[in-house]
Image (cartoon, rainbow, N blue to C red; front, side):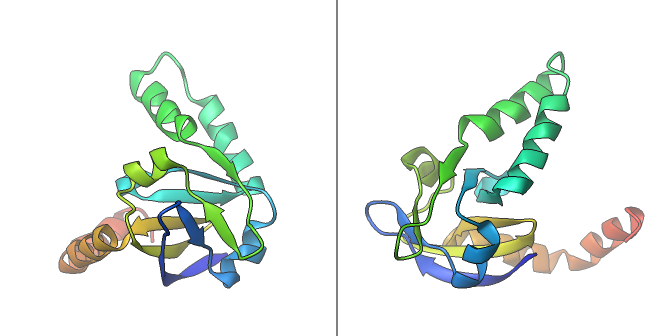
Length: 143
């Protein structure tokens, strides 16, 4: 299970160090793609296969389903760690997530998310202001 928050930098070539605690869980072969809220999602191969299977089950006759599948698969890229524990984040994904220099790498249960540090801080600040409402919504979902 991925958990925790780590601050790193992405270099001019688009290389990003993956926190050591996440490297073992990701394995040798994993997938990076566009996530929700303008972050990137990084899935271990087994989790990606589960996610991809769910995408394949969506009805292609549904416009929202087609859009969701395209958004997730068009940006998907296989990744491998280099000897320094870095990945190369494709340019199209760096642009989508507004990754410039400072990034937040967070664990979210079955995946890792990569955020622009500024976007992550804005997201967290917005969520903290609305925590009571969020808690009520989770109660409605049975949590």
